[in-house]
Image 1 (cartoon, helix red, strand yellow):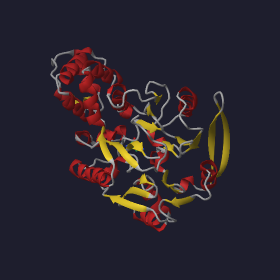
Image 2 (tube, helix red, strand yellow; image 1 turned 45 degrees about the vertical axis):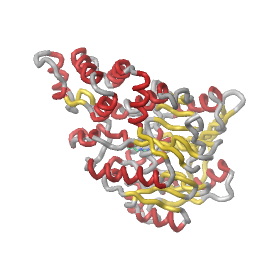
Image 3 (spheres, helix red, strand yellow; image 1 turned 90 degrees about the vertical axis):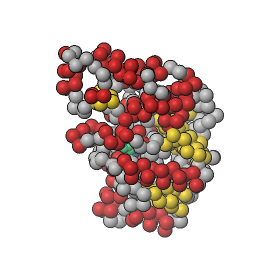
Image 4 (cartoon, helix red, strand yellow; image 1 turned 135 degrees about the vertical axis):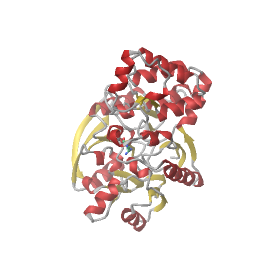
Length: 404
Ligand SMILES: NC(=[NH2+])NCCC[C@H](N)C(=O)O
């Protein structure tokens, strides 16, 4: 089996990334918010920063896979571009037959590599060869808020979200917003068709009616998952996950801790406020400090039971992970503004590549100093452009294989 993810901290062996490309240059101020961006990253620098991230991973013994490469390998072994493109257009809600035919014509005549790059970058209205006098096309064009027949997918470099590896399986996620919904199709295609990944159990499917995003899923250990119930993830998704993981596929997990987190842009996913650094060390945003409430879905012979617990995060973690102590490091230390600023720039979004060894953004120097003082080894990456998309090292990566 190719997928093995039983913790947040086990030595990382293989990871999935997407190197940002042309899609970032297709952002413009008038529709930034619709595409879940707050600013426009400078592509050249963003790529340099991303390459620094990938190289650092490689230098530390991690094999880096790019989702577009896996997609191309999967597609070339199958050769069914047409079916894929049609499904992509369905999900993009392209119903106008003229636009649809022109897009199919354009995309299927490309090589797989060109096609996938184009799907990610988006197709502007002026790129399609269409007869200029078709009434419905004219109206469709005029009505578009974003001047694209296929919108770009600028959030794809946050590979954590459209799919999530858990144990031996994966969730193919139903993303909350149309801006990200099509992203899950790439990994879904890989899982269905790639010679090496075919057959991986799917613990969630993107056609489920409820939203689930990977930034909300943390594998705390081989028995315990934490899932954020957030702006992006519905409680119903946890029910489906519980049934699939506990019973239908029977992976090793025995409980799912559901964390209620405030629904706001700054805290969109659980991993924007809470990540794991070592067996017994965690970083949290002050919002999760004090008494919090969680829901526990516990595996039973049939189905699962649900209970509520409240207490301090460190107590909850100690109990569920069977730890003697749990050290919780505060993003931004005791300075309220630093906490807000560094959380906004993903100070609490660390990627552990081994127990006690993490990759972080260089800009969050207050939180990073606390990590060092707590004995954590930190590897810093440049972050002035990447952080503009509101995601850090954990958001940008999806582990494929971790040692146990
Ligand atoms: N796992 C994460 N926290 N991902 C952050 C994703 C950021 C992205 N711009 C979004 O709004 O969806």
